[in-house]
Length: 385
Image (cartoon, rainbow, N blue to C red; front, side, top):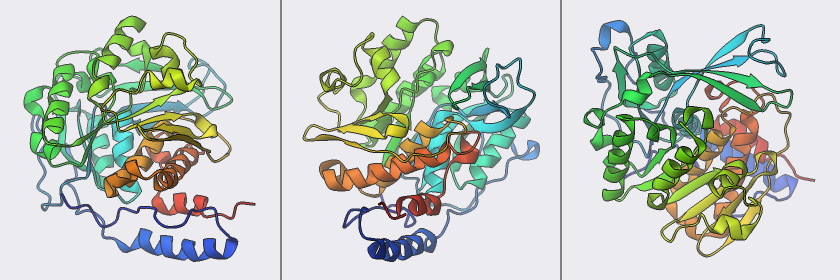
């Protein structure tokens, strides 16, 4: 399928260059970042134009999204003061979130073409989230509304270092009730990349919908991208979480995982040991990415491996940083999948992804903090001394 013209890809010389060439690149990059047309407007959602569970759009036809993200979308309540427990926090900032939705918005904000498939409650928060997708030019035609369940909520505790702990309200929430019959299979099959996490595997009927969606994508030749996004409090037990996360491991083409998740899935083995990481590299995997927060990331393919350093920034809230990283790399791969065979260009794309993650931690919340393409390029093109 054709790709949206606004997607920006790195090519040519490495970004680490002389100040003069960086200035020239900045002009070229910013021009490229601002020259494309945005997606056609999506439907504004209100009580009057939502009927039951299905959500249809009357928007003008648009090019099929390059990346379709499947899973949960919810409201994060983030404390306005770090370093306090939930009970001690004096106030909370309402922030839209949910890892797959974060990735969809992140890609669109970077100039890419994305869609979100998932379910929210037929309530004010659900309408708000649908409108946030619309405002960010994310295709929302695969979104569904449940009249009998609420939109999921998560209260997030921030330590003084910006790290997080979660308290979820979903017993059940609407995202858990998405059914296979409600899937937009046409949207899935026309994508270039289908991205998902593991939270949608926890309960039925969403688990069956997840498996059906991934199978449809795989059968259509779509690249499968998997970020386990471990949230242990949501699972019945650690063993159940490990078993379910690994149950779909061998179907993914691209996997992004954190150091903590490696340790969890390998039952305590050293996440910095390449031999341990390689145990998670299945025969059909094209790219395994290990994120290390401010230190950047490691990458593994069948032919090469390496590390790309991150950007050092002042941390306010790490919520959404991993999702911003995923949005960064998927936006590049959707533009050109041959990056998977070219180590130098893959490293440049990962520099871009690292910068996406770094800029996100400078603000509170996930979606509100996701960077624009211009902001990422500006951060990357500063002279390095």
